Length: 105
Image (cartoon, rainbow, N blue to C red; front, side, top):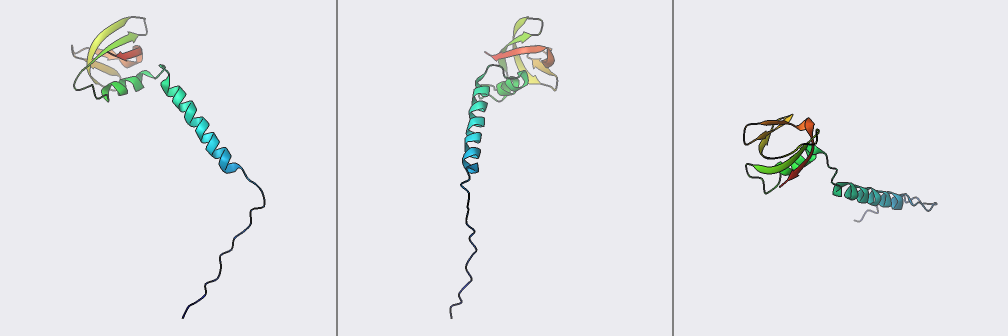
């Protein structure tokens, strides 16, 4: 014995809405802006340090070039990081707040 189920209500859309298209285009524009921003060399120092330590080339030490806020550029081998400073292989602490630029050698 087959039972006939009631049909589903299907309301008609009376307006031609382009919200879906606007959302998709908006997300594409946001994504392209993020790509452009990520390609800049103006990454924050903390982000660059994190990239150095998560690099596949980093095993237990990394040779870096550090530019300090007083304009001095030094080349050091860093082995670790605390909350506010980098630890060099010579047991020196370099304050992260004083670093303006850091590059992986």
